[in-house]
Amino acid sequence: MSSNTASSLPDVVEEKPKNKTLRFTVVDTTELLKSFLDRILMIPSPCAPSLYIDLEGVNLSRHGSISILQVLLLGEEHVYLIDIYRLGPQAFTTVGKNALSLRQVLESDTIAKAVFDVRNDSDALYHHYGIQLKRMHDIQLMEVATRRKGLSRKCVNGLAKCIEYDAGLSSAEKAGWKATKDTGTRLFLPAHGGSY
Image 1 (cartoon, one colour):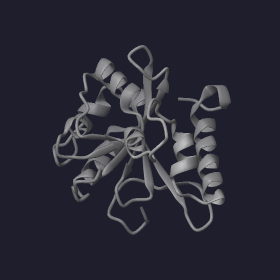
Image 2: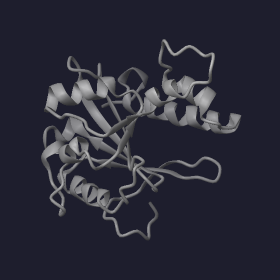
Image 3: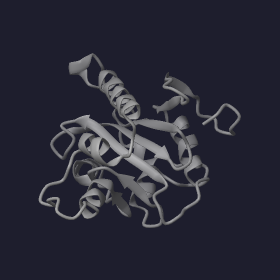
């Protein structure tokens, strides 16, 4: 998102790799959440996913907790980090000007969403907040379904393996991806100096 957009969400520059600026916004108030929700309806609703999501938490499942919901909106090189830990249930019940809540987005069968390995995300959202995900495109399962002939389909690959073998990135781009992932780990995992 550039500074000339009509959004009221602030930009935070985290890292500047070659030719790109990765930006993110921490959404930790209901006012910021309302602004984010209003952006969702501005995205065209094609057959392909328009939201790319991932959850982070402590032991992410029904037995753990959800800390952060990461969202990339189609067409933006900007990640929104929704602070579920701070917002609690309000993260899913707050509505924007368009009367749309995050719960409605996640449960919508008209808004296509993509995720890598939906299992723990779905388990945690359902058991902690009663959210039943709909119209989710699981990229991990797509990778299994499109594996070249002769390769085993008995096991799913993790994200790092898929990036390594399937993303079509150069060595420099893979290194940049890993550096960004490591930065995120340092920001959010207490064992690596971060905090939820």
